[in-house]
Figure 1 (tube, helix red, strand yellow):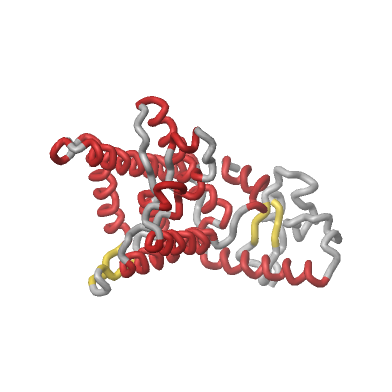
Figure 2 (cartoon, one colour):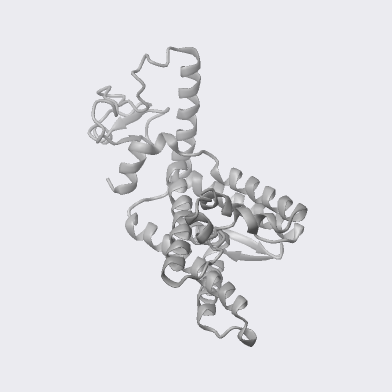
Length: 291
């Protein structure tokens, strides 16, 4: 059982389901806000390290509403793509693990911006553009052969687009070492902020996968069983006493033990049983299959 499994057992109930939908809605709100008042975001909501250190702590969350573009057409396309990828990753990983990946990336951005300010005195306003782009790395890692229609015409597999995505990340990081045009200090800080955001986003991706390389995506059958099981649980709770099972979320169909009996127990569904039967780690491979 790796660190993600342990965290999920303790804090999984706090995961936000369908997280990417809420993120996309926030981007839409940020786009409208930018149209109405172009300076409000940078003045009150952006990731400004000095302002955070002087008490404006809401910026550690509000900075994520910065939309990926000021073009309505591009924003609409980008948000549909972000939602599709986020929804697929949540289905493959589960809500908790997707939450961990996204919010860890957000946290890395905040820490990086504050550390750079404390060390150099330079305030870099980072956004989540590269974090969202890193989601495509995850998607390509899990589904390398899924095809996308580039310009709605050319079919290209995700694994090849991921290489293009990686080249864009490398270019963004390289910008920190390229002299700014005309020696303009403002452009120099902008390029360095882009490079820092690209670096922490790819670092989040690498740390997550290196530390959870044994974690596998749920198969379509597992996802369906999980959805069916959650639906049955909700229906049962709506008609029965919610305390009848002691508040347990998992119960072995053989021995009847739950996570309340032993927090270290792992529970899995059996793909060979007909129906939604859950078993503890001791009976997963030894039970008689239900046909």
